Image (spheres, rainbow, N blue to C red):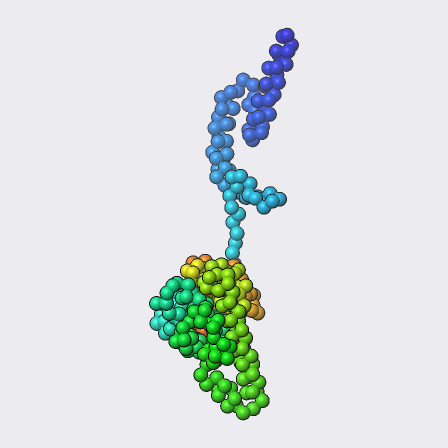
Length: 326
């Protein structure tokens, strides 16, 4: 019995010694308790300092779920150099809001007094479909002629293809194309004629789908909009923003695509508007997504032109990587 008690006390003493080593402290020599206490006091500040400098890392299990209590991982996001100053300069150059897009964009082509709201949304979508590879002035003229005839889903479906083609066709389109009197002019006119016929077909097909599936309204989701004939990603993002007031992504057209590459707002050169959209959305703050399309489109219409850009009048001339080569 006495032997068992001695073994128990000896085991407790060993357990205490192991615990002290585990905390980074050496066990005090027998009979020197004051030195041990002083030693423990001297180690306390060091222990608190290490705890404050501890790095917290969040891990994910095999199912992609974060461990309980884990903090989010810090992610370094790439962003272009001087983009804040470049954006501020573009805002300054665009402060008058006098570019074609500011007066003739899709949001200005619909009839704000047309009841009900679904008619206005339909007109916004139709203006966006017409705007593909078309100048804002031409789109606005076509929309004005369509509205004069009554621009609703039912009215478009009741209009024959030839009449609809004449309504959306720009004034002087054929005259300008065929005035060249050469093979290139005829080829260009034929290409535009085919594009116009495609727009008539897409407008009719989309209008029929809207009548059958959406009671004459337009879809309220990006995926459903893109699924409509003749509606691309840029049109769908703009339709979500203008018609539904929802920012679903950055609308990238030829102007945004060109300027983003000239300013090096993409990590590498992009070859298509969709590639540019994905690259911009990786770093551009979401609160700027709604603004960036109209801002850059107008800038591209007035200063950063496709051919012979007006670099001398641009506030970003010293900050633009492409300015020296243009």
